[in-house]
Each structure stands twice: as C-alpha cells, then as structure tokens.
Image 1 (tube, one colour):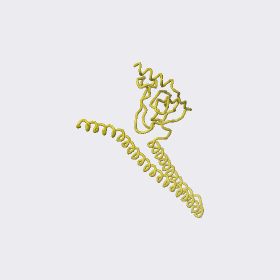
Image 2: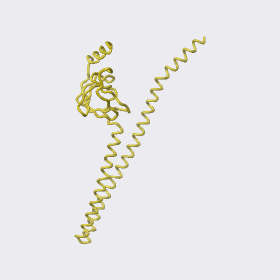
Image 3: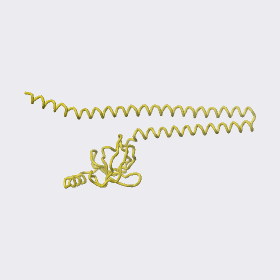
Length: 197
C-alpha cells in the first residue's frame, strides 16, 4: 500500500501535459475503468467502452494516466494510452449509415412532392406547362437518385475500408503477441539443452 501511495505521488509530481479540453475516444475494442485518482487502487467511478466520447483535461504522459470529463460531467482518471483523437470506425460507419438513411428519407420526401406537384399541375395548367414542369421534377429526382447512388457507393467503400482496418489490426496484434512470446519459448528450450550436456 505504501508503494502504491508513493507511486501515485510520483505520478502526480511528474511533469504533466495539460490538455486544452480536447475531444478523445476509447480506441480498439475495450472497456476501461475511470477512477478518482491516477492509481489502480483508487475508488472506481465508472467504466467507459470503445467509442465513448470524452474531454481530455490533463495527461501524465502517453503511457500513464489521463484525466477526462465524461459527457455527464463526471471527471476521473483512466489509462491514457487507449485514448485517440480518431473517431472509432464503428462510429464512422454509424454516421455514414445515418447520412445514408437521411438521404433515403429526403429522396422519399422528394418523390412525394413530385407526385403531389404532378397532380396539381395536371389539374391547373395546360399540357405544355405540365410537360415542362414534369421534365424539371424528373431531372431533380434523377439528381437526388444520383446523390443516393454516390452515398451508397461511399458507404460500401467505408465498410470495405473498416473491414480491412480491423483485419490489419488483428494481424498486427497477433504479431506483437507472438513476438512477445517467442523469446520466452526459445529461452526455455536453450536451458533444457544445457542440462543435457
């Protein structure tokens, strides 16, 4: 307990990097504990998960603790190495889906307006004016349809990109774990070889 208290004091005394209320997210697929003090034995405030948006208030260094403010106003400390400025891929994908849904709704609304306008024009204007207006509305509808097609293309490209990033991340993680385990495995084999002499 004394060691942990001294460690916490040393961390607080270390030069701290002060943040200017910067937005950060939890990177990777993980859940982190938010504590009252920069110490793993400090009282737990809550847990935050991947994609959680928060405000960085202070950092004790890249591989140490960071003080954050959560959206509900609570403040606490967590492992700073898991914070990132990048919006996580899942949230980017969700934003793209929301934009796509908005575009679809706008296209549906536009189609209803076109149908309504066509009906009114048929009743109120001569055939020539009606034909001109129909051509204009069809051009608008085609333009919106082209926008929707571009949005769908962008969405599919984003999905493919996110899959590639996730697979790459898994491969890099596996390589790191293998690289960390390999020296331990080879060390054990060398020792057993010397004993045979």
